[in-house]
Image (cartoon, rainbow, N blue to C red; front, side, top):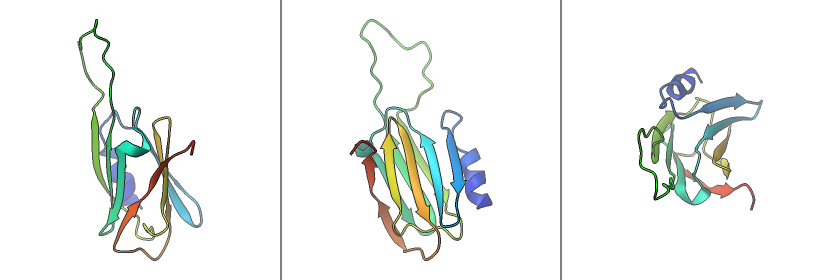
Length: 120
């Protein structure tokens, strides 16, 4: 699990993430303001968690950027803990917060994780 913890530290400073663990699963929580279930794609492949997310930023017509720090895209590849699996993984997005529940043991080689809005 330390490889995943280290990889989370390497995410851009503007991305906040928490990693939680229970007896049977890991819970990865990532703040992605402006992202929705339709704009987030998560896959598990070859022992790695691949997260692609995009968000939209509304720019009022009377304003222009002086400084822009919020990226439109997140493309992250994180190592799974050795005992985590993509099988039966679940994900939700609620108000721009992505929660991925990753069960422990028995990984499938390549798995897409469905992401749903938490309200549905």
